[in-house]
Image (cartoon, rainbow, N blue to C red; front, side, top):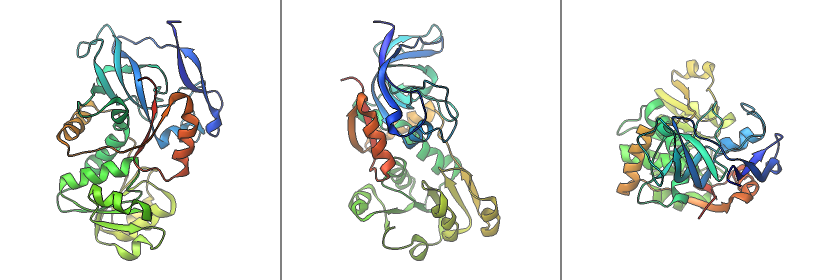
Length: 313
C-alpha cells in the first residue's frame, strides 16, 4: 500500500527485543521537509539509550534512528534546494528530538541534509552524520582544539572516536588514544601518535599535559581524566555534564556535547571526505529487519567504527 512502509518500531522500552520490524504509516513531509526513500540508516549508542527509556522516553510507538542516506522522493512546498531524485544524507533531529530513520521512508527537514559525497555509497554515507558532527562539535566548538594541542580520546576506535582522531590530525594536534590491543594497528593507521591499552595500564599513569580530553565513557573514566589535564585544559564529555566540583578542583573547563543537525558543518565534513582527508569505517551492515542484532553489537561495547542498517539497495 502506498501509505504504508516497513519500519522498526518500539512499543515498550526495554532490551533489543523491543525492536519490532513491522508495517507502519508512511510519513508525509511538511512544507519545509523532504520525504526521503531511506537506503541506509546508521546505528548509534544514543538509539540504544532511547530504546531502553534511559533518556527522553519518546512517545510510543517510536521509530528509532538519527542517521540516514537515501534519495529524495518528494519535496515540501517551501523547499527549493532539492528535487526528487537527489541523493542526500544527514542527521535527522537530535536530543531532545527523536529521529525516525529505521524505516523505508523518513520525513526530514530539508535544512538538515546535504548531498551525498560522490566518494561514498549510501551505506558509508549513513555511517557519517551523527558521529562526525559529534566529533566536530566536541573538538572544535566545545573543545576549541588548536594546532599543537595534545588531545586524549577514550574509546578512540569507536564511531565518534575514529572520526575525531582523523579530524584532530587534520587540525595538527598530537593524538593519544585508548583502546584494547586488537585496536592498536587500526588506530595507528588512523593517525594516533600514542596508544594506551586500557586493559594493561591506567591512562593516568602513562600520559599527562593534556590540553583536551574527549570522553566517550563517562563514570570513573571521566573522573580520572581530570588528573591528566593541564591547568586550563578542557574535558568534553559525550556522557553528560562533568563534575563541577572536579572542574573547580583541577582548574579546568568541563563541557558536554549532544550532536545537533548542522548542514554547514556537514558540508565541511563532506569536503574532507571528498578530498580523502577523512575516512569512515563501517564494521557491519545488516538488513533493517535485523536491527535487534545491530543493537546487541553496539551494546557489547567493542564496536570499531560504525554499524549500519541496509534499508534498500
